Length: 176
Image 1 (cartoon, helix red, strand yellow):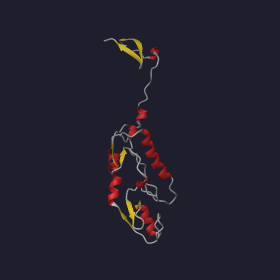
Image 2 (cartoon, one colour):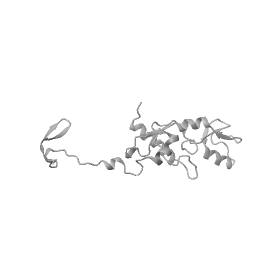
Image 3 (cartoon, rainbow, N blue to C red):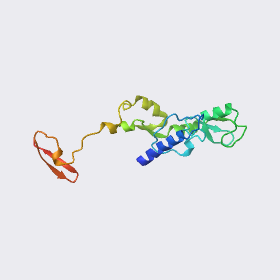
Image 4 (cartoon, rainbow, N blue to C red):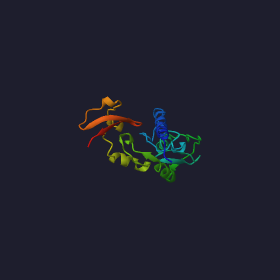
């Protein structure tokens, strides 16, 4: 099933909203927005930092996932589990869940410049760094061509006869 532009924009919007809803001092594993092909479920976002769970830690008390950054910070401060409030807790990297996160599909950040790449989140940074479209303006700025709507508005072309109308617009016939 091909994703619609609505799902593209909603996945980016969710990622943007999650990043902007952070309170000052909160750490996020999402320093940037990932243009997801399909919107990930809430399970892939840290409930503490609201970022993508790039390094998901499984809590020993309630079995939920939080980001590595959140786990380290809260445990260093001696705080309770942020989800179930258990005082005696620990966490460890959940490599199985990390593989699931890394397999999420994303578009290239330079899709608006014409890059058609899409791949797994694990390959995102490598692709973006080597993308041939990273240094140019967006395609919307490159393709600003004049539109000729009226028959008399065509520039003069050597060997051209009168324009003719069709259902798809104006056609210019050129004599060979």
